[in-house]
Image (cartoon, rainbow over all chains, first blue to last red; front, side, top):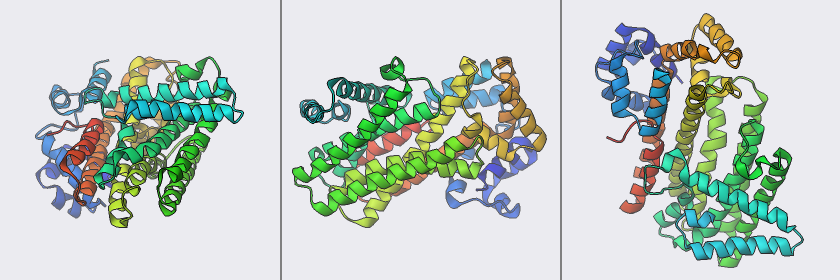
Length: 85
Length: 337
């Protein structure tokens, strides 16, 4: 457990989010988050796909475009409905 | 019917299911009851194959798992037919009980009969599942293998009951409890399909543990999918019915990480959601500002990667590896790169 704390902080703190995106391992270590190696690998994989998207603005057109490009169709459909409606 | 979905000789399958049902009738089980069991198996087999997960793939179905894992260990796929049937019957029984216990919408095959008849049918399916496993003795499978598989089936049922007990006796789960319940209910069930299929062809404990692990992570991915689907689709339909929302992953996560004020606000929205579904926008804002969508995506990615690692640690034929990894891609939230 620990991934949830990292993601919550990323979703609420732009500066932290940018630092994690730039160097996840170093930031997680410095900030003392308790992530397993598999959580870290998954986080890096997702962050690699997120690029420069601002996570604190989760209904931004930029993020919606990311969802359209990256998510499986069934999930994308539901998630986009959720944003649009 | 169950076998047919799993791409095993449909004639042989129909014959075996019919033989089982006839044998039950001959032993005093009334025809209307065996017909009802037949309907439930058909309904679940169709549902399993037509679910959102498999629509955009080549008809893959979870019922293929025992056969693929048997083949992965060099076993003859035909000998896995009994395991597939037993696991498929267990799937149907567990799904039926879960639907009733969660107060979900009744499946068409029992909607007109009511939940009491459905519970009774599910009990019949549990018994039939064990009868299929006992048939393995007559198919030349050795005593130690059959008893091991029988034991694993029943240990898994107990594990699932234990997870379900926590799930249905709590109104709210912590994130830690959520993952424990998911592991007990979904992870262990899909691990069973992989273990039992492979066990027919190997007793190598390392290989079996890798396939167990693969199945467990697949099951966790399926659970994340189910929660995402339940949550988002219920809200989109705005039918005002969210059964035990504090046990659904997006909400459990948000409650775990949010401030007490935000948690209270979310509580209030959930409590009054049936009266005022327009508060969906408020709920959306709370969840997404907590990063719920990103958390689900990342956890799904974690389980996908762990499942792949388990497969990579054993030597299996490429075509079977691809089929198993395709199953993961059906339930990963992110597209395959």
